[in-house]
Image (cartoon, rainbow, N blue to C red):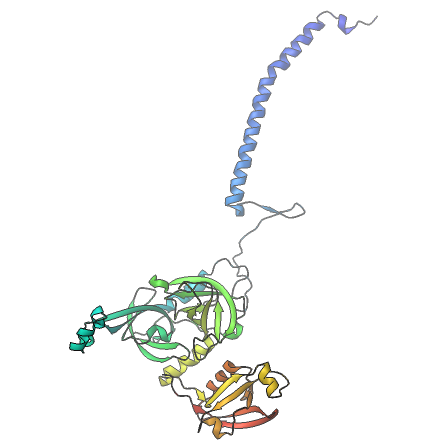
Length: 414
């Protein structure tokens, strides 16, 4: 007859011994569990810190669960039309190439002192030459410039050096060099200086044809006298005109920060090539609002060549007073659409009058190039060499007429 376990002698003793062993292990298990939880917490905290501060140290996972390790490639990335590496995060190389050619310009000129005594009627009555007796003072200003030839030719703005009788250039390496004005062109706000030194670091001129809206650009100059400073932006617009700043306007608009002192400095592409001369900003406070304007290198190159060769800039001239054709003028003249430029004044004895151009004519093109508005017409005429002949198509009584104009030399702006 099988024995029942409950009746086995010592059975209760065995169960009690087992329970005592189980009860004794619980503190050990709790200790190990606590250590495991703390280790996991510390590991997660460390992972969070690394993921926040140095995510590049962590492997990344694709959607299939495969580990993908991101590495920096030593090979250059594909370039954009202006040479910018795709996805670039640094433009140090472009800055290194261009900065040695960008100079700080310090100018000074003598001015008569101003005193409240000059407003005293009694003193002015008995001392009419009081203003001449006041001791002269020197006014200083600052700006920027770009070395464009190793022989020491520097491009800058006309307004930077206007009226200065002493000009000093400070190079990126700290050298101070005196300079003189080779020539200036107020109508484009450009000037060329000749430094009293040679074998200087010169910038490479770029090509505006490859510049597009949205391209990354760098502005280099001397804002507020701080010295060479680089700011980053993009080309916001091309061909900006009708700003009322210069006679001839074809500005590059950029949001690269440009401030007082940047005038005359370089606007470069991401290959370090010059594409513009920073000229002016739109601002209500005097500081940068993200709208700056640069004179394009295509215009600057022509002015530079003429000033170096002849000491001045010569432009073609017709002797006309132009006006844009709007919808109302187009209706009055029975034009199918508003196009071309209306001639509302012809200078007596000027090239246009001698060629037979009349008030009321509408100019459609000059030398085969369309003249869609007044700035375009003035630019086309200015590009013509004085003494040459140009074919001009006009509308007269709504009919096309071809005129042959002997190009004159534009009088120098005063």
